[in-house]
Amino acid sequence: MSRTPVAAVTGSNRGIGPEIVRTLQAAGYAVVSNGRSARSGPGDLHVRADVATAAGARKLVAGARRLGGLDLLVCGVGDFFETPVSAMRIDQWEALFESNLTTAWRCCKEALPLLRKRRGAIVTIGGTVTQNVRANPRYVAYQMAKTALTVFTRSLAQAEAPRGVRVNMINPGFIRTYNYGESEVPGLQRRVPLGRLGDPKDIAEAVVWLASEKASYVNGAVLDVGGGLWV
Image 1 (tube, rainbow, N blue to C red):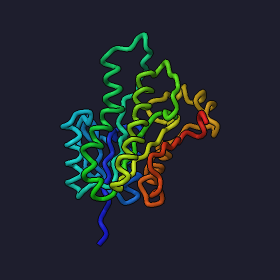
Image 2 (cartoon, rainbow, N blue to C red):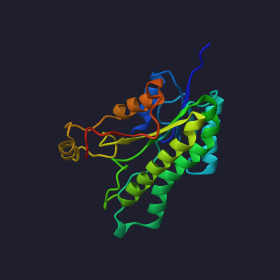
Image 3 (cartoon, one colour):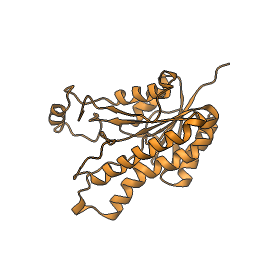
Image 4 (cartoon, helix red, strand yellow):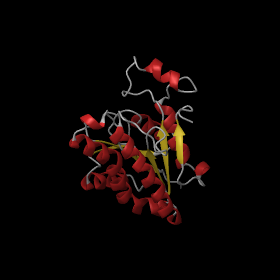
């Protein structure tokens, strides 16, 4: 009898996260959703926890155990707000690094024993082409945290490959979510070679592909899903 694969998705209460959960469910996964607030989106089991803390990461993985194990971890949580250097506060700096980088480290560390048992996969969600060192004076702390996440992702991919765990990153471009007001959309669209903003479904489908056997030889990759932005 075939078993149902299990995925855990952090940061799945808003933005791209709910669509990742729905798309994984449509692909046959049982999904543990996660957020710091009460459940507001899809998922077979919701774990309310701050996964920037050790206790929160353990709670997330315990949720996966309740569903039978873990085949896929999607590290999607990450605050995003403007942080010019001259105006940045230390609490903003710490919040961006904790939510975008520390969460991934804690969740991966807790999840690896389960993922190794099933030769599973990890997908981290980066930022806009953060595999390249690039200045970003409006969002400097966010850009730095996501660039560091790239190094973490590739390092973990090398370390875990002998144990059968693949680790890859998706860099979303301009995706139509709460981050962008309607007044911003025309200007953003003009910057994208394909001439449109992405949909959360574009990211979700890339997650499903990276987790599948069709991508069984893809490891340590950084996949830009941005319509040709900054190619």
